[in-house]
Length: 414
Ligand SMILES: [Zn+2]
Image (tube, rainbow, N blue to C red; front, top):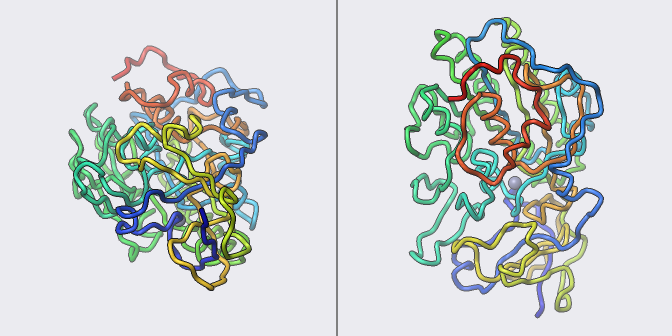
């Protein structure tokens, strides 16, 4: 087999596979075979905390119930926070809990599969969003990023869990949050669709205004999606100065969020969780024909490494290729040579990692925990909110390894 590799600079998600090609091609894309044992996901559940922590969480002073603001920055690769002064991110880190070597995405390391894994605690094979776009091989229907038909979106996202318990939830632009599921109807007041023309500052201010509602109406969960710095990463790769500018902008927005919470005297009452969906890598350095198996390994999906959890769905193509880090499979030969960033690769690559930072009453201050997979976040959030969650792929005991025990254990779980 011969494959063509080239560099891209277009702001697109990796892997780039047209739906038409999906229907006519025996395999499509994806990421790599290199396993970085030193950084593998096996560290995920072996949490050990370095700093001493207080025995119990800090009590709420002004809010009547726990609140989580879950913020996702698309393509925020682990390490970006050190590229430029980020005083607000550093404040959350120093006064909160951080995954010391980053948050591990699910495979494929793409935006929609990962945001839905964060929201549901399920691997893509089980929440159904197996790529950013794909065909259902049984019906022939196409899933795109603008498809909000509930039939595609399996599992129970956090906002559905929250409203099922009679609490309010609010979502801002989070992929999949516009899908009606169970008690969640994407109410206009609490469900802002993705609109890239809305300035980030306005999105933050919308979240802050929820805290001006009567206490009982304040959403227990607020999710906020920001499409940066993914766009810049695609255009210029992860090492370009424009990434630094995007990271500084994200930090400034966090400063706006913190200032708004402090103004309301609730910053220490609110749980702020900052994550990203995946990392970013510069694409390869050469283009041309290569030998069979070089830079690309092809599997029957049932033979993929089990750690990828990427086989148990009809929506996953029967044959899956894993490209080496930085390489891209193209269906058409091209002479183009450009430099750009990409993601979608094996989630064992360190370059695909993002960040996890938690700040608030249930997070110990100044604590580092080992990296973990983002499917654990669902249980983490339901634990903070004291809710029984839906069954998922996360570990039920995981929250204990990251969160402080609740101060008042007599509160019944809803
Ligand atoms: Zn992207």
